[in-house]
Image (cartoon, rainbow over all chains, first blue to last red; front, side):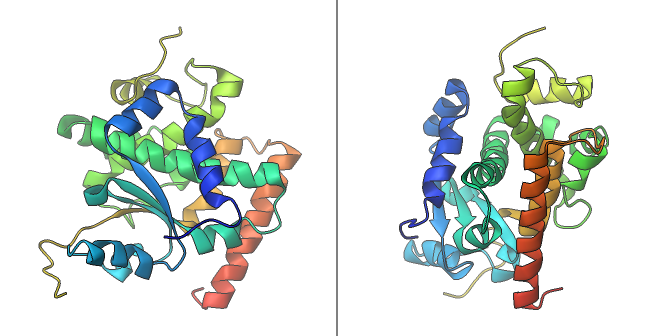
Amino acid sequence: MRGAPDGLLGAIRAARDALPASHRQLLHETGVHEGLVWDWPDGVIAMYATLREPAPSPDDLDGAAAAWLRERRTVVFNATALAQTADGLTPAARRSLIAGVAWHEYGHALSVVLAGPEQRERGVQLLELLSPPMREAINYPGRYRKSQVFDEVMATVYALMIGGVPINGYSRPEFLAPELHAAFREVFPWPSIP
Amino acid sequence: MALDPMNQPSPSTFPLAKIVPLLRAMADPMGSGEMSPEDRAMIEQVAANLAATDDERGTR
């Protein structure tokens, strides 16, 4: 990892700073870090090699915008790919893009830490409750195992819930089925507003 | 370092290919087709950038 001349890391940290205080605290308490990797996937693999630990395979990281490295409690972002993806955007659009990806990843990290095995068994069932555009954002079946679906659902819902706070406040948005909202609130601390 | 598949970490990744669907879901969660001009412009530019990157990589 190296510095971010174009402010990518700043945009990611701004997205983290925009989370509710209790979520920022949880990320802090669980030791979740974030980092940029410019030479993807070699830079990710090198993080493990430095620690003399088995590393993920390049195939596992291929085509990824970001990855949650459970063993390292680190969210790593594919800096080169994200910089190319953000090319030509206005500063506001660039912030929105990076925030969307970052909120998804922070939601994923929190879900992995906070959810239990019984909740995780409901992943595929909850996937079916997502609206079509939300379901389209999750590559299942495809990239994920059945056991990973719950955290992916929570990550996607989390990104939309955090992004929607300025519009919806903390109440249940219309696009979220009550059962899905309940599952979300079982995992994430969320202000109780009728 | 030789890798033992049993010990090899399996990171959970968010694919580049799912950025546009995620942005679409954030801009129009119900799929009504309505979104702000700013969101639409952002998503179109991001989709174009990702397509150009795919062309460079020859992946699609």
